[in-house]
Length: 90
Image 1 (cartoon, rainbow, N blue to C red):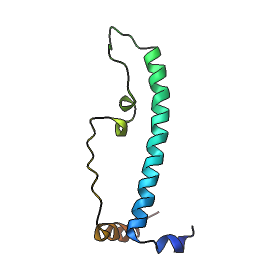
Image 2 (image 1 turned 90 degrees about the vertical axis):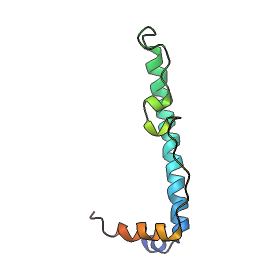
Image 3 (image 1 turned 45 degrees about the vertical axis):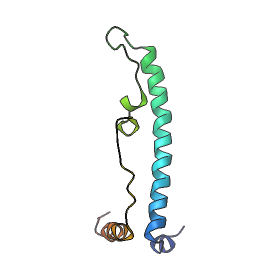
Image 4 (image 1 turned 180 degrees about the vertical axis):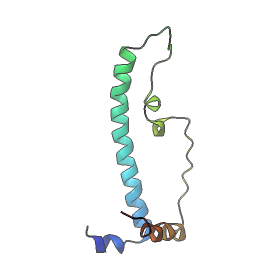
């Protein structure tokens, strides 16, 4: 997708792209956290830490206690976010 085509996407489609990216990153983080758990639990001192390590111990976004509400932004919210992207220096 070219820059012009990206710029013409409606806010709802941009949000869908963002959500797809977040899901992809979350899966990648979970895979890395699963390996970290395996290693950490294999070398864990059970007297010092009786409960096993969990993915959220390595990636905060994977914690079960994170109660992120799934609030869908309005088109106006997304348009404001997109307008502000131009203000960021790269």
